[in-house]
Length: 244
Image (cartoon, rainbow, N blue to C red):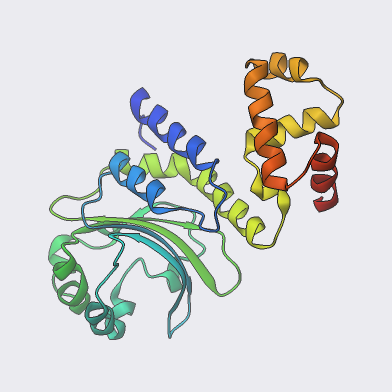
């Protein structure tokens, strides 16, 4: 990992901090992907998907920018040539490194591939940056950024390496939400406040511990009650304890 500028580290941390507030079913909504593509420039495609990692490949979940995704005619033309992709999910689903397409194939080698002429060239892709997350057996979970004209840099790779542990936690929280785990409805800060409530701390005591105002704590408690459909702090705490 190369040394990152303080500005880049700060932007990366702000990105995942804000992402912890998401409580929808998608781990990475388009708002998140747009901010990621601003931090790590991707002018072709940025997306996240979960796929069946064995042929015939089947997409289980996908969120992309542009929203319309890859045109169907390109998808159909690509199918016979997917094994030519050196970063294909069937090979890489257990990968812990962040990889670039340019790690595996130079421009000259890429342009000899049918996949380049069927997919990458029509979509304006000259390099791809990908990271994989733990997935259920037989599946792959991948985040990918793709762009034209110039390769991704080591700075870009290092940023995604820095983000990977937080991105994995975001995916796991989304999994828990789908299973109906009420804890996943709350942000990390809301869970922290609820834990202090469980230890008998008052609003002012929690505010002092977290170095925030009592008003901020009260707003968090309002959100907790609303999300858990609870009338009191005790009722909210009981619902979270039941889920443990």
